[in-house]
Structure formats: C-alpha cells, structure tokens
Length: 239
Image 1 (cartoon, rainbow, N blue to C red):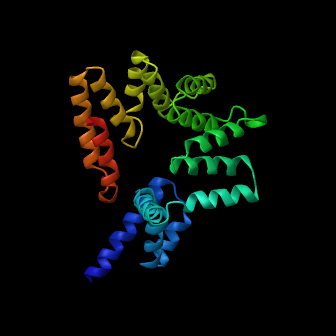
Image 2 (tube, one colour):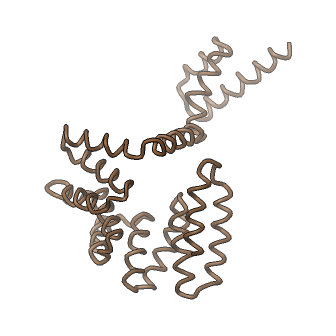
Image 3 (cartoon, rainbow, N blue to C red):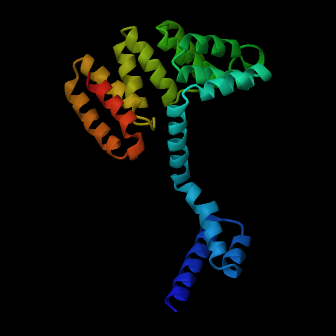
C-alpha cells in the first residue's frame, strides 16, 4: 500500500510538472498509463537534462579522455579538415590548436577563416583576437575586438580579451573597466583570477582582497573533479 501511495504521489507531481512547464500533453498519458516506466522515462528525458547533471558528467568524461589522449581532438580536427576543408572544420582545428598551446598555428587558421563571406565572422574574429593576445600582438588584438564592437559584439568574452591586451599596452583604466565587466559574467574562474592579479599589480589591494573573497566562494562551488584545474587560477591570481 505505501508503495502505491508513493507511486501516485510521484505521478501527480510529474503531471503537474508537465502542465506547468508546457510539455506535450502525451507525457501525461504516458505517466498515467505506464506507471513506473513512464515516470522514469520522463525524469530521464525531460528533468535531468535541465539540472546540469548530464553536462557535468560529459565534461568529466571529456577531461578523462583528454588526460589519457591529449592530442585526440587535434587529430580528429585535422582529419576532418583534411577531408573537408570547410570554414567550420578550420575553426575546429584552430580551437584544437589553442587547446594544445599551438597559438601560431591557431592564429593562421583563424586568419584564413576571415575571408569572403566569413570576413566578419564573430567566432573567427574572437578566436583570432585571443591568439593574437597569446602571441603578444596586443594592438592587433584590440583592432579585432573593435571590429566585433562595430557589430554589437561586446560581451564578457570580448571584454576579457580586450582587458588583457589593454593591460599589456599600459592602458590600465580601460583594462580595469573591461576586467570588472568580464569577471562576474564568465562562468570559468579565469577572468576573475586575471582581474585580481591586475588589481594587485596596480596597487589596489583592498579591491583585490574583496575579489579574492568572492573568488573563493565561487571556487568552493566547483565540482570536486574540476577543483585541481580551478585552483590553478587561484595560484595565478595571488602569484
């Protein structure tokens, strides 16, 4: 009897979820007329994917694969590009090159994407700007960011690249403004770590301490299997 009551409660709860979230009404019939199986299928297909659990699992899996075979994606990207040299495959190869630290090759690939109908492609422009920063070509990087701004692309990713380039060129006011915008808006800890380090370098220790406290709060919420990588950014911030 208690099992039947529990099953009924689960069914009613899931049906309410279907109605409130605007899911197709056939889910209601599946939950009602296939008790147990219907509810399980609904939870697996409609609820769990929105909790971020699957995403976390995929990221953890990708991290393990990368650790065991670091060049796997680079090889796959190169093979795809060699077979079909499309802009999409060139971008994939450029990103894989960045992941391997081959910024010179990535810069060339991103630059080659910026031709013809893709001359103003935002993904290629941002990728090119990032590689230019890594190569120390900061004025060129800012030119790319300015191109993106013309098209209204002024998000946190663009701001972080601009901040790094501006900092390298001694444009501290512009760099600080861009870092302050990017730091709380980028999910990874890189932007805030770079902001903290920048504040310390320009002598704003009080602001740096405040940001570090916020950083530690964010760090404490990082899943355990990503903690080691996340802590590298803390070490960077206080170095």
